[in-house]
Length: 261
Length: 332
Image 1 (cartoon, each protein chain N blue to C red):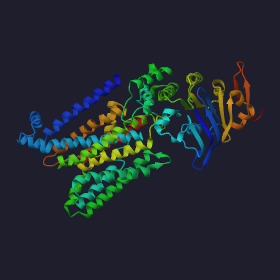
Image 2 (image 1 turned 135 degrees about the vertical axis):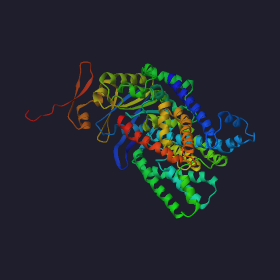
Image 3 (image 1 turned 90 degrees about the horizontal axis):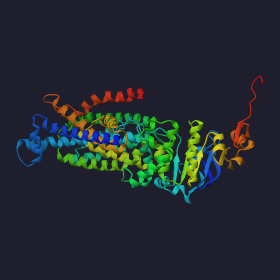
Image 4 (image 1 turned 180 degrees about the horizontal axis):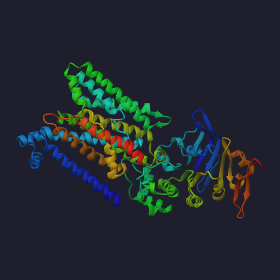
């Protein structure tokens, strides 16, 4: 479980987010949404302990995240960063096995049988067993995302934080990724995921954290956050929330007046 | 697994080639020895004949120095390229070698005992590398491009200062000693120097071994490696200190031998992949082979004179560097 209280986040003198309070509980899949540059990734990095807050605190299972060493932090929180170039010849199984790094003593170059079994489970969980020997560079964006999720799973951390894991994916790929995350949450993981696509969040998660105007504007079930005035305020554009036939809430931009109309 | 079987086969092949090169290195010289005589002298070190004396007093330590120099520079290059994720980095380009060379030039002028050379070289290599890294800092990290530029600038500065030392002491034998030493040569060193250099090389290699898991995780990127539990600052310190120890060991017995740390890691990655668990051990025989072959050519190419091994490797290294820097980057 992660608890953030009175967080102020930023870089040097610049404040990006202030007065942030957020609790991430086991079994939850939470989407963090907001406009570009609003501080979604900054918040995720602070929750993972990769960015020291300017004020406030982040606690992981009751312990301040800043007090944890790099390996202890990796065993508690798995951060799946946005796309970063990996060496071309790294094989899928090799990458996932690196997820066990924080569980090995410093003198061991490779994992033991238990580590190998955990790696195989992680590969099976994201349906990547058939790709295990392939180089990551040869995979599609969606397959690569599954590799990073499997690596995070191999880390064995009870909390997973993912930065835009559905970017560059088509709708089917995005749903497949979120289905995997739903399954992990059902098994007791606490998961926060930054999503760029507002409607994907509305359709696929139960709780949404809306970032805007330098703070958390709303935090709750989709129905509480998907309100015309809240979304319009956060995104700085007129947005209307519609309900589809199956009850899904959809954020639709208002029609813009064009010249001559 | 097929990949690991191929890597094992290539690593074994490198070791076999190294053994053959070592025998050739002992056999070839002003007095040619038959491989059988070389073997006989190696297994009977106290035979007391001329062949045994040539092998044990001259050629065998020289071959071991070549192995140490090549292995140390190649491991250093493999680590630096892995840490900075840039194939154009080597201990020569990051200024460590030039700093060490300048310090040893000063030590020669001052008449310091040779066992201290490796210590001076280590302090200078570490100081220079840290200085270059400080110059290359941009924002939150060290930019590889800035590191190379800063390394070239600082190397030029130390080369200039070394030239100044040579001119200032032009009338003494020290300047000739510095010049011959700058060209890179394995001549004139024996067991004593090898012993001192081996201590530094062993320490550097031990630190390199500790850094392997972190270097391997860095293949996924800095941010991911940190998320997996890698302490990036600790890793950078480990690599810089290990690299400085290895460079010091090499420079103290061979002078300036460039390009081994640049080219060998590329060859090794082709043979064994970028997995540091394979690339680092494979660097040792691969680097050793390059320096051994270069030393044999240096000893035998010209009659009555030995070519400087550093100059010889530069002749091969510059085109290889240009190929890696421009052609491969364009085709990547």
